[in-house]
Amino acid sequence: MEHRKTVIIVIALFLGLSVSLAQPCGKLNRQIIFTSLDWPSAQLNNAIARYIFEVGFYCDTAEVSGSALPLTQQLAIGTVDISMEVWVDNAPKVYFEGVQNGTVVQLSEVLQGLEGFFVPRYVIYGDAMRGIKAMAPALDEVTDLVNYAGVFATASSAQKGVFHNCVVGWKCEYINDYKLEAYGLKPYFINYKMESGLDLEEAIAESYEKGVPFLTYYWTPTWILGEYDMIQLKEPAFDEGVWKRMKESLEKQDGSAPKQAVAYPEKTVYIAITKEMYDSLPPELISFLQNYHLEDEIISHYLAKMHNEKPDQSVLAKTFLKEQEKLWTPWLPPDIVHRIQNSYR
Image (tube, rainbow, N blue to C red; front, side, top):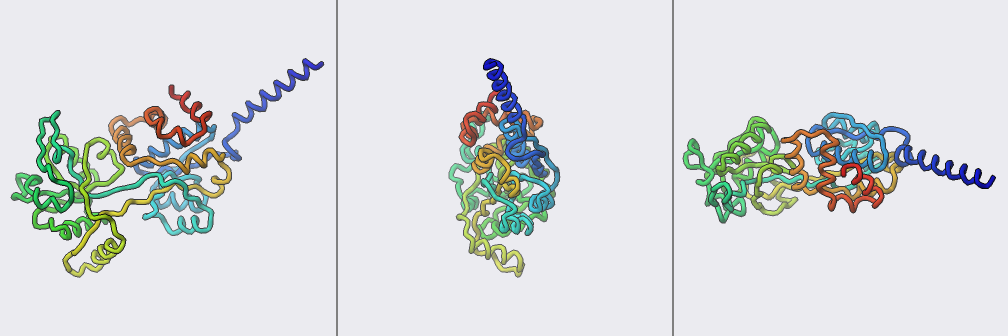
């Protein structure tokens, strides 16, 4: 009789364990809906996070595709659960209302978007493997470009350097116009403006592959900066007061000459979830989201892989997790780490 009781207890414990492992994560009994934003870094972060949710915590996840504004609005009203990238500079009013009233919870600052003036590393340091000698060895700051304008000249630019500005109509076009004048570069450089982001990508890729010098505006994280070794030139440190005066001058368009410019501000990009999701997920998953942060260089590296290899989400996530174990394993408990590692080893 005692033996039978022991067997029953063991079976019950086994069944209980099996049921607990099969249950959705935390207090949830439904799918977790991620926003699937229409740019590559958000798709990379979704791939990593969803893999950890599903494999590490047995969560059922899905995603809704779209652009930033409507999906961030959906997050604010609770029709989607998690956004791995909310660029707060561009977020709608309803998002900030949600944060203020507690229906939306901001977690980790997932990345820091940078933008500015870039040149290939070989321009400053050369590239012995490609037989390229340094062309501007003392180039460090944007104001140094006055001394190297000829390096960036082309056959059709009449000895002036060429600056690849950003896309016509984007805010950065007008800010870069202002900077060229404020930094004293306008007399020395032709301000060449691109018709599309693809045109800018192609101009950078073609020039880099040829090993010719070029000066361009660009931003991070992007596949371009993951594929090509570029250096961002130094500018005066961002200053809120100067930046405000720059924007006011651009809005007035009164013809006055720019007097001072500073670096672009770093973009603030958060992971954000609904309060319902924050209260329902296991504490270990919330801790994971609170610690999740990728440097722009790492993101750009994997964006280049996405661009060149076009892997599906699962392959992309496994590649990242396998190659970056020192980065992500401290974000999770050891048993979850082992479960995830066993899935790709």
